[in-house]
Length: 419
Image 1 (cartoon, rainbow, N blue to C red):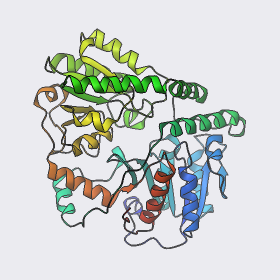
Image 2 (cartoon, helix red, strand yellow):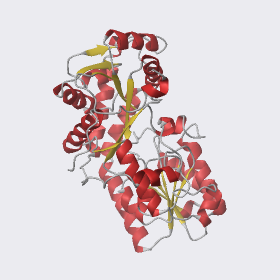
Image 3 (spheres, helix red, strand yellow):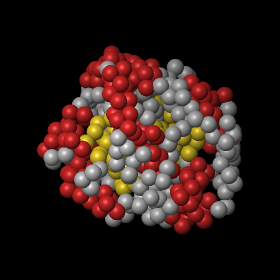
Image 4 (spheres, one colour):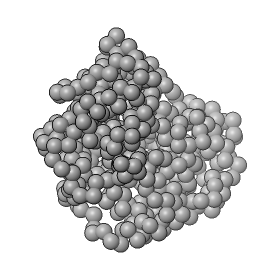
């Protein structure tokens, strides 16, 4: 079987009794619930735990503790594929160090790879794609392909929003990092893909939880001021500094480089009566003070009075009133496109297509931004739902139940069901 064939979706429904191996998921119970659902559906499920956080959130049979080094992992994983006769591998994010080696081994062994990520289209969608996501996606970059393909598809099933809890996400992160630190002796070869020690990250999450009400009040005040003043503003949503989207699928080594570029360009080329709202990522761990760093750069470029920092708030509401959105490659870009807001992309993104995003660079964007073609975006979204999106989310029981149900349906080749 060729590498390309191994990574394409099955031609028909997946047969019962597939043998699935889960690698790392989110810091939370998603993979435990997915594993339980797959087992109930008649599939054999295995899970590799790389640290104590993975183990704490598993709790099902067939957990495999990997205690070796990153260098030894590909050969070990190849043996696991053969020993357990694995047909399918599921993982969250295909750019983690252990996952990159695993994907290569899956190609060699003919195992399908299912990659989960935050949804390409927000909110309330999750990406579940064969082979790779984002910069590794096999999706077409031709807008006409989406228009032609969408014309052959039925309407999207009814889709409802799902609740999401920041507090739940923060608590899960704290618990994962705590169990990781306390059980390091059990996993001597473990090397995290994240740049911070878990204790440092845990302190950051704790600080964010303690300041939650203060940050919420500041965010509400800023949103009210922008609305009352009928401000003309551009939106720049930050991404996670440790995200592979930044490290591997953009020209930046980290978010600070992107912030510097955007603020410098805004200072030199944006209309004098416009503002820039920098929006903190809701899942940022609080280790770095992005508000302080943004303010320092704004002063350096002489635009301190025109740059606002939004530490808390609904990105849907702030995006809807924006003149345009600047993003490295965040999925927030599709949220803006869905509302007819112009978008410019600084990295690689599946939605960075002619007729959707601005194609003439950041400096010209501030004065020449044009909205996306609505018909092309509708076609793009419809094809994504057919190919690689499932309803649901990760940070409430209702959201998890929905995403697990639809993930198993997609895995087995069944159509999405209406809510």
